[in-house]
Amino acid sequence: MSGSALLRLLCLAGFVIISFCQTALAADKECGNVWVLGQQHDQSGDFIVYIAPEAVKVVSLTNGGKMIAKGPDWRVVCFRPDDKIQWSTTLNTFQGLKSVAGGISSSGDGYSMAPKMTKVSSGVDHGVAYSKFTDLQQHFYWLADGIKTSPRAVEALCRYFSLPGTCEIILRAGQDVGRQDPKRSSVATAAKKTNAWEMSNLIRYDVSHKGNLKFETKSAKKIAYKAADFEIPKGYKSVQTLTEVLFSKSQKSDIEDFINDLGFTSTTKSKGDK
Image (tube, rainbow, N blue to C red):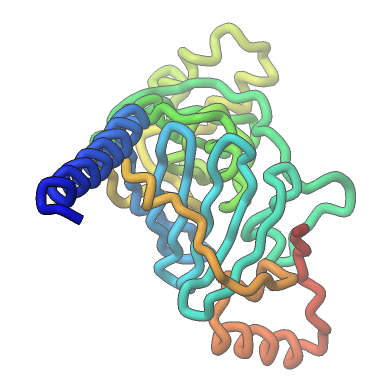
């Protein structure tokens, strides 16, 4: 091959590579920014949650397991990099942490939307605008108005953390425990249009404090979208239960020992489909 022909080939190869990189960068830019939340579940520990417009990823800092769900099919894939194993299922059958804890419903898939709620306040938490809602059982939810993503992404996270389904990302969830004068309560104002029975329940909320937290956001920031952050790992061995992925070998051994000490046999298996 002549020197000029080789030079033309190298130039062509360089053009192809540059075009590919530009296309990839453009695709990433079109996907917008990604919210990265540091969140804490009262029973399952600390997590880093990545939220893109059409994808979510959860990284457990407590057990090392990870979860990715993304469009267009929104299949849920849970995997463990240390052991190179994965488990997957469809979104509408995914039960997340509830399946590991043995809280699976005998009817349906155990997932349901939050009951009727009343908006009582709004604010900004770690740089994220939110609205606070409460229900008649004194449960409260801080929903992230400032995070825009697919309803399927919201569902995937609610299912993962075994929280009631909501229309927006949950920043905090728990139960209010205080009482205050209903004349000074912001809830009283929000409940004026409800009936007397609802009012008698709603005035028990004290929206000035956090109450008993089940789920909390500790930090929040935005980063540039990168498709690689939401790639499903390849070459991992498929396993039969979610428990195998969410817990390390030592953690599973401790759980089995605990159950055996109580005199029970563990049946907390959540089967995936392949």
